[in-house]
Length: 322
Image (cartoon, rainbow, N blue to C red):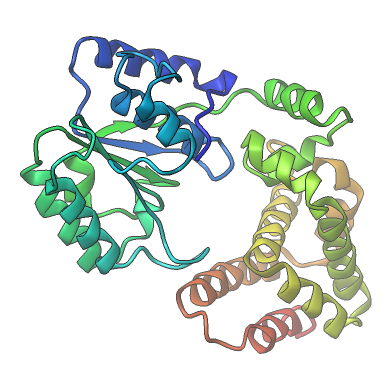
């Protein structure tokens, strides 16, 4: 796990350093930020500092503990995460974490348990964690990471010291990504990725700019010409949840244009397409289809065994219904 401090995290890191220096860091830290904001790297710095044998407010990078952390072999650091992307964090993983929390430190110091996707814990897993957070073992810190606190068990949230770092301004993110990639970055790439710098960078690096354009163009053709159902369905299926999210943003943009607003348009670099769709589609149809799309996203996320191709094509055909 890479421990790295990004420029937009300096403020929250300074707050944590102050707490560390005063020995007042809460036993359970909840860090909530969008995917691609660098929260894992920020949490790693905190964990490495807590475990460090020499540093108090930052890791020394030289001691045995720091070297083990950098090699991903620290015996007192435990990283709990779902088995695969999109899956819930299971109760067995949380129970294993609870067991680690009560074990004696192998290096004779602190212990840290990092819980990734804490907002994707099932009820049983959340309740199992809650018991340990209510009566925490000494010399053990929990770091919980989430994209949103809203879907977490309120009693778990209440047992944590909550932190929600602000994402930098669009101009700062744009400048950072362009500096990393040495190329110009379209503003809508940042907005598609909710302003998360690392997500925007990865979006460009993995070729998603081309995939996104192909999907938006195919969707626009389908809506205007009422043909190409299989092509657009195939593109959405290949892009999975990400593709559905792109269309959700697009539908919201269409509604904004239909209502005479140009504020916070995600597809700001594809305004001609958005405007054409706003003219071609009745507003009531866009509204009903957006709500249906959000239900579809939730259904496919919760039940991974469903026939996504069939459900997506059904949703698309509603655009052709009178």
